[in-house]
Length: 379
Image (tube, rainbow, N blue to C red):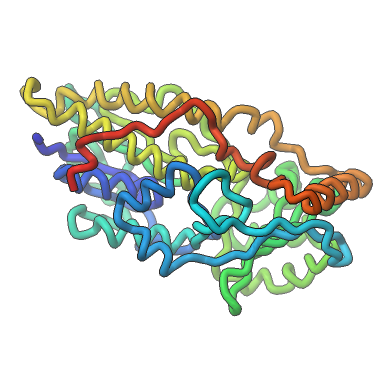
């Protein structure tokens, strides 16, 4: 197979997963990351559906299990701490997963696992990113933020779009997840029209913390205790819930993968899984179309590979995105609405109905099969 010179922007989940597959195919891969080092912060993720067999195919199941964040299940509590419902975690990789799956892991651990799996065969440059690019014939000229320039056959944009649950009146919510005996994750959610958060400058962590505290103070349960500890939180992340739906995912020899092209939002529970799948399919199509003996150079097949990647994966992502924007504001805002939701969850819990996965997660997509690539099965 002819060797392509490929640039990946973003050393996150999608970028590192793609680098893994592309280096296995023998391509020259450079990964640039604006952060000065590998970003090992972030909250808890999980793998679902097709991502689980892909992880196994990559030979990473053992190291993944060594770094898992075990979670027994999810409970829903009221303002007094009373449990309304409990949904046990999943214990199998087969079928529809529960809200808490067997495949839970911290984002930083998964990012590091993927990085370790490909760093010997790919070149990583931290503290720099893409400033601009220009497409010239069958190549892309890139100017980096450090002032340097270079030319690539293909540029991939892979930057990421940057449990106990309690719902409070006003469309607010709190969820906790315990990774270990000494570490508790706290998720605070509220409406994005909050004046306090609008005044927080993007990237100003202290302003974001203050805005969240102002918005969430007095919400009930033990929320105020969490807010008292917020100023000391080191692993802090604040972002609006986002959904990305780009059409198409490529332009010339520049292509999007993961959140950059089709972020499904945290509401679907499928962001990490889709990043795994997209990286695999993009690499598979590159392997299929850029290694044919009837082509003078591998560059001749890039356009076909990108078109096939979009055509094969888009039907799946369309199903994942379906209804997300319309139903993004489903949390009840009144005390009565919250009571009704808690009672419904309690009944589902008693009847052992997997409510969170059936009506929240978008894992169960019918009529679509993960493509198989001979080129990715040779190693």
